[in-house]
Image 1 (cartoon, rainbow, N blue to C red):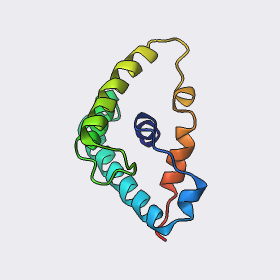
Image 2 (tube, one colour):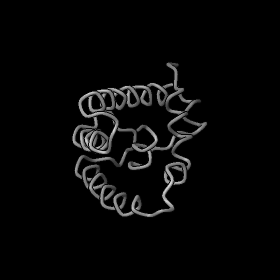
Image 3 (cartoon, rainbow, N blue to C red):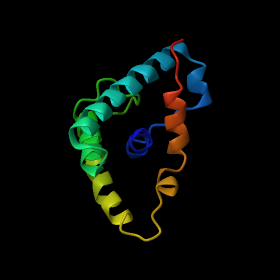
Image 4 (cartoon, helix red, strand yellow):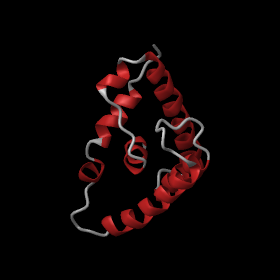
Length: 118
């Protein structure tokens, strides 16, 4: 779910982020908030598309600490809706594969998962 959220909202974690203690703290708070949303909705609904959509829309509605300077609730909600429309079209293809779909965002999510307090 974390790579999907990173892809939907274009969240990227780079080597430079690890060099900045304030940024690391911000990333950890962000990650922990997202993890709590994932746990909540996957426990309620199981690991399925409905739970994933709830994680995305809850985050978009209440982005406690979003890591982009340009993020606003309306834009995040629009992004969630746009993603749903395009995703439904993409998964209908016989060529759809999660690894290809998520691409570099798998690595960004792994980097985010490995963040430790400064």
